[in-house]
Length: 107
Ligand code: SF4
Ligand code: F3S
Image 1 (cartoon, rainbow, N blue to C red):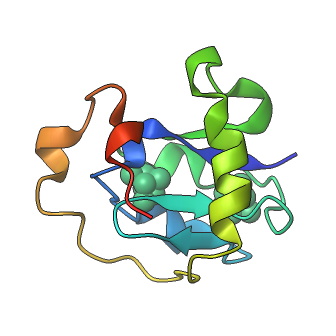
Image 2: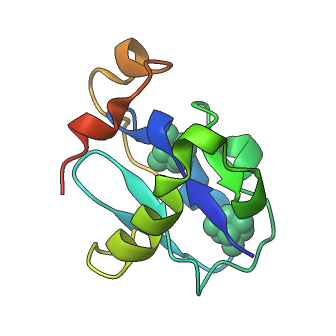
Image 3: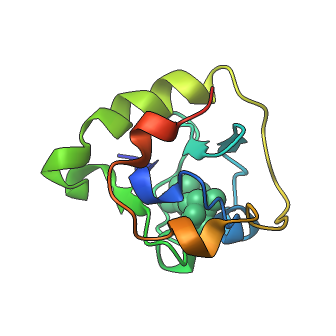
């Protein structure tokens, strides 16, 4: 089992999640973070830390966000590791809660 970062992280990227992860398994793209599924130890610490409520246990990812499970697998292999919190993206508050941001995902 792993945890998965989903749509509402896109264009927000608050990064509170990386501070609590005991195994440093978050990877960072231009406007989104992902979790490496083979490194995540399923501790659940990150889930309540995300102000955007973007992190779900793999078996609780909403039906309309199932594609994020594969996206986390794929992007964690190519993006760099992130272990320290940084400033959210400049328009994070404006984008928080908007639906269907996957079309804005930058790779
Ligand atoms: Fe890291 Fe735990 Fe979240 Fe997995 S569930 S990404 S190990 S904090
Ligand atoms: Fe993204 Fe939430 Fe982490 S917005 S960067 S998953 S704290």
